[in-house]
Amino acid sequence: IGKDLDYIQSVLNAACPRLGEYVWCSQTWWRTTEHIYSNDSGNCNRGLEIKHWLDNHEDEYNHFVILDDNTDMKPLMEFLVKTDAYDGFGFLDYMKAEKLLQGDRDD
Image (tube, rainbow, N blue to C red):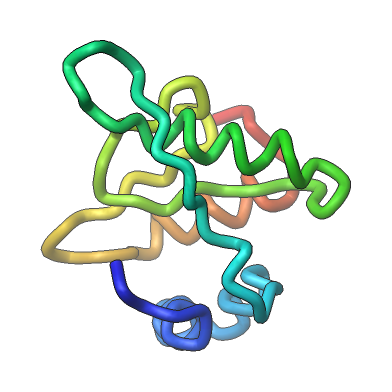
């Protein structure tokens, strides 16, 4: 929240050299801006927001991964690499993310 793309790329590169290269956009349109609610309780569903963004930009990517410390990613759970809110993005997270970015969804 409140971080720009350069910051996110630098954090990913610190976790693993060149990982930030996978985040390729220098514009702010890469962020989801829609607030899509999954039910009447008023809970925002990030997975639906991301799916909405992906559906509207499907000619701009081949593979994707969601890096988040939350799990509200339905219907995209198979693309989620759940990071730890305290320990961050670890080696096993990197391995799973790399696999997803290569288009391999089998565990």
